[in-house]
Structure formats: C-alpha cells, structure tokens
Length: 183
Image (cartoon, rainbow, N blue to C red; front, top):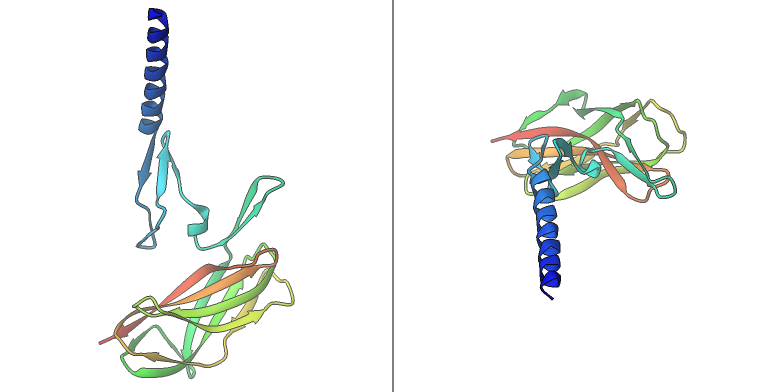
C-alpha cells in the first residue's frame, strides 16, 4: 500500500514539474504593431517569438487539407486628393470632398474585391467605396469616386485599404494612410 502512495506522489510531482517546466519555457508578451497593441499579444517559446498572423495587415488563407497558412501582403501606396491637391494634414475644416488613389503591386493571390474606408479618432468607421475586381493582375491602380466626409474633430483619422481574397468571405486590411486634422 505504501508503494502506491509513493508512486502516486511521484507521478503527481512529475506532472507538476513538467507543467512548471512548460510554463517557464513559454511566456506571453505584449505586442505593439505600428504603435498599437495587438489584442492577443504574442508568445516567446523556447527563445522564439510567435505572433498571430491575422494581425499583420495582410490576407490570410488557411488550407485545411494541407494544413498550410498562406500570408499575402501586397505593396499598397495611397494618396489622398482634395481636388487636384495631395494632402495628409488638414485644418479642422468640417466637410471635405476628396478621393483616394491607390497603387497596388506585388499581389500574389487572386482577389474578388477591394474596399476603402475611413476611421475617425473615436473609432467610428465609414466605407468610402467597395468595388469588385474582375481582372486579376499583380499590379493595378484603384481610385475611389469623390467622397465628402465631415472632419468634425481634431485628431488622427485612418484611411484603410482592404482586399477580399477570391477564396475568402471577409475583407482583410492590407494598408493604412493617416490624416491628421489640426486644431
């Protein structure tokens, strides 16, 4: 009977030691991406850093049959035009009519649509334009129609460029452009 107690105690302590050893070899960490904290953070496991791929502003596709994650991040350059003038910082003017010109290159996956939206400093977001993509190319340009937006408050506004993979159902953020509204 005594040997059973010893065996059980050895097993329990072995399991605890293994758990403690695993806990020591992995560590949750805060992750800042472009200055903003990523909700899920990241992990350091045995000296290697792991972060969620979905938080890297690109298109993520998972192939269940091959157990493969495909990450695509094209180069996207955005320019903001009010009439024919490029802008980034503006005075608090209220309503402003502008359009967004985007140059996309190095696209290595098929997409079905693009979307451009604007997010105010308070976190509220509005879609500027969504368009289907009929012809697949690795390089193309996209210009929104004129859009009037009310820049009510001073602060940082973010224009986001999103793509929807041909095999996906959701839009993925692939680029951002900031507008600073001065006081």
